[in-house]
Image (cartoon, rainbow, N blue to C red):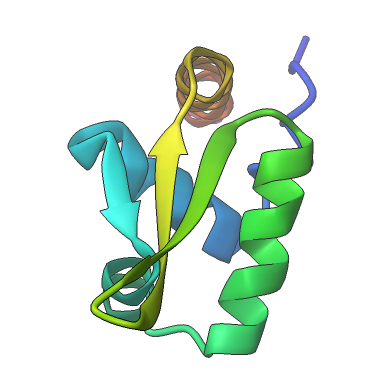
Length: 96
């Protein structure tokens, strides 16, 4: 039986954000924007959804009079990512 895939992580951009944060633990908004080739507006919306799910923490501050947004993966986000990867692997191995 196939397990349900996490609908939060099943979005391509949200999965990319979490994948990046799993490897670097914390990243600035601009880094995520560059790495995902996303628009600022779309990235903001997806970050908010991940924050609401408890998968990331968001810290907003100013650096040299410029706004800076930092995103950090949470333990719940790491767990959700690990489960998602495990479930995807199940889909791939059952299809052989």
